[in-house]
Length: 229
Image (cartoon, rainbow, N blue to C red; front, side, top):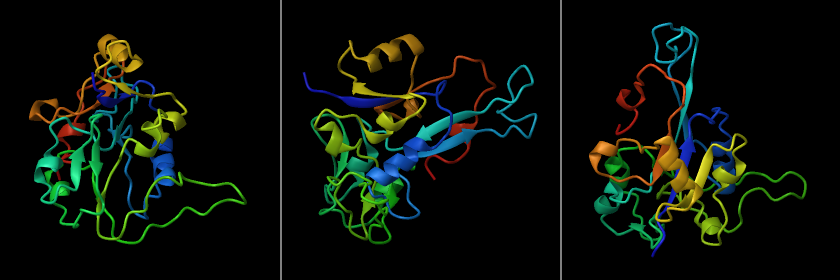
């Protein structure tokens, strides 16, 4: 049986430190102003009637890491006029930069606002002394193409974890095979009731979220207008 690789994010553990986003940017040589991973915060503790306020009156803030969802029924794949966006044998949504014409149709089609346009040449992160920063296996993207999270394909094809998973200090991320019922990811999904974002629109995301155990006021995150803009 073929693999269907996916990611599980535990919002109970996530501390909103942005380590996943920064290490992703460094490892993949993401240009200035662009992020493949981002962390949204839900609510603001300054206002007592905000979703950040718990039912006991104490401030509570949750974090929503977001990136490409590697959808099983990906709108970006259907929208791309050149075939530059495609699904591989492991279910990962990939990008062929040689075929990309920079039309940004895929960006308009993505309901998760997960894709970015490369406006300039890659800006390499400078090395400190003799230490290498970033994965030398990651190809540079030319100016004028669309890019996004790849699940660190240079690592995962060799059985390694994506950089964001390996680097998370809170151990809030689990990468695994959704088709393997014995995997840690599948176990946590069953035990903790993990769900994808916008599951009702039929995209079948392969990124799932474990909600916090504590009871919070209803979130307004998915209704905030961020997704699909």
